[in-house]
Length: 495
Image: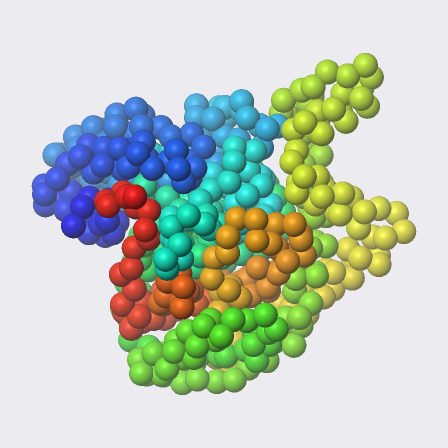
């Protein structure tokens, strides 16, 4: 097995056993980025030189038996996390030359534990999108191909599509993502990897460029459930600089992987059998139910009656918060400036040049629902419905320990297939948005291939701050599925 196909857990063990060096491990990944990134566009800013220097320091730590949990492990960092001295763009022209003087808490935690950053991964601009096609630096290509169709370019999902594509193709062993309405889980499903959105407040938002502050949450993306547990162990924790960070203990997540599921109650929400759910996703869901039964779980039918309002509510709350958060990018305090004859003209020119069409659309939507005369009718009502969505989950978790649903209604689609209709694009998040609105932890696990040879994912949703149960159930699904498929475009055997 090549170094680019190892899991984080196996690579960490190999480094400690001196089977290979951190420099060799990191160089294998930076070479893969050099070879494949011009095609996949998974990275906006590769950082090979800095990564190899960090790998050399990792080898010194290993030689002294001073290794931390992630020492020498090459990771991709979504270009939404501020990284000190390294360009951070949010995939937007308005920040194309922004170099932060400070480090986000999540990336600082990963560096503390020895991780090596090989680059900043591409994303939908300001994390607004479900296909990674809104980036000012160009779309990301999914490394997977449909059977018999090597030409059609598929989307990797979004907004964390660059992270998902990088992990799937062997350009990183793991990567950070952010999830506002499904932006970790949906691309994980499209690219055949594992993606975990922790409970809101579990990982600090300090130093993460904001889209919707009451929804944004950082999380890990990797090729196995255990790898996500290892990454989350480092990423999570209380941060007094983030007012939404929750001060609670971080458990040993790896200990939950492989834990017995005997007696675990798994809820199956009736409302997730929605219109537009493909037959192969439905079949994968049923197979997942059978696998969890075989693992000793009790299957319980539950109802989340306000699920049908989740998407509409999300597209009021999230744009409203985005309108507020992005007001700071005016050419004076933040971002690139375009001159104008008057102050208003400068604002207008700066924001027109700096923001892409999808970001402008969401700012306008958000400004509208917050405006006088519409605030009560839209935003206030949406917040009330959000409370009902959260109550549905709370009541269900009085009966069950975890929920099992599809992650996305279909496998990955082609670039250009749905992009002309924003509503169709928004529907890609129909199964992921409710858990985000409620702040619940959720994870996507790859469970097989569909009829066209593309990966299918199932979603597990858990109680707040009970990521351990998600990891235990996810590892059972992972073991039963035996998903070892790799995409057509990858570091070894790349076409």
